[in-house]
Image (cartoon, rainbow over all chains, first blue to last red):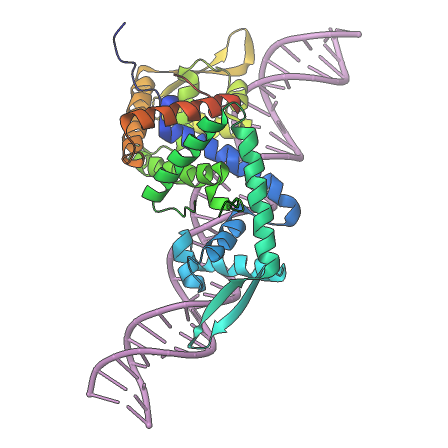
Length: 150
Length: 150
DNA sequence: CTCAAATGATTCGAGCCCTGAATGATTCGA
DNA sequence: TCGAATCATTCAGGGCTCGAATCATTTGAG
């Protein structure tokens, strides 16, 4: 009975992260639907808010997506009045994006939605457990080169 | 300075689960590529191994995907010799799937891959921290109705 | 100063993944 | 016994993303 179990797939961190990530993203997507947004749009807003980048190309690199995808997302966010877009005077090839006031407010609402989903997902955890889970994931995210604010 | 930070998106559990889930899945997908498998194929093998279901419809429900998707996955896994497929004698509409010996071996190899990725992802955590992270995620997964073996 | 090469943005076509509708086979129930 | 229900299967379509091609602008070599 001291034999080590063969490592099962569902006991792995990777599998649990993958499946829970899907659940979290699905719920977040549903919550965003009424605003006409997708998670990536919100990620773009968050990247701008964090000052991670300002030109579209830099944004694409920071987010790990194709530059062409940033174009269409920026189009939509601009149409919603969430971002302002203007050419860099110093290099007119670059499109500079900036959060508007409305954009910042929108981002905060979306962040609040995310935290509401957190509460559902982690309902079975004590506040202390939830906090240390959040922190541990922050370490992994930072290690993986993902955006992490504290 | 005692003011509470406005809840940022990237500090949320949901966001971290979503992004880390993508990273984990991407790496797992890459590791699986040489075998011609996708994560969903492995999830199907795991569901069979766990005895979660045996008919294709039950499998689809257990996995949360369309029955038609199970058809094509079962086709491929059968072609690889990982699953055996036969009509239920008691109800010949039902297709029963079962893991073959090769299928079980394949699943174990894939699980080992997942655990190798775990080690990369959680390299910055102590063994104890890693274990409590794994356990906390197990609680959330169980709560969310996801497959969890211990 | 000039022009070819490099760079950023944009458009657009292609590929992948998944779903839902339509169909066929089989079983169930009045 | 036959119409309704159920399971499997096929297939066309939609959503999401990328990469190639194109246009505007800048840079650097001469």
